[in-house]
Length: 151
Image (cartoon, rainbow, N blue to C red; front, side, top):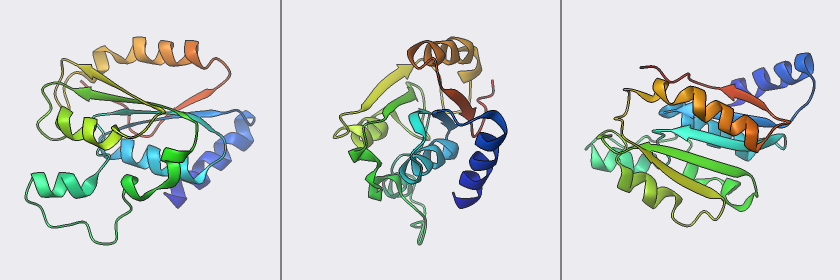
């Protein structure tokens, strides 16, 4: 998270300081949320099939707990008034819709949107419309992807 934040600082210095929209897929979505807790220049976060509660995720899949890992549910971002769009796949068995819904249930700034995709396939077909919608909603921002969605 620190390394990504430093990279964003360098990018902001080169491109001019503008509010950021950080976009992340899967684990990149969790990183996007964690970055938002540590930066004041984030206007919005967009996650796609993101692991927003790794404790629930490890329990669901019977994995060992991620000891020492940062967890979005422990972070103060929920108290900050930045927009959050969480896009989930209706066919996603890795991060099921219900897990995402539970993770954002008490977040007044979060909007949960479902798409007819699974965890990996076929977010790319929606990406152009999503990106233009973000730019339309937040025109003076810079959209940065942590992990580009692939087909």
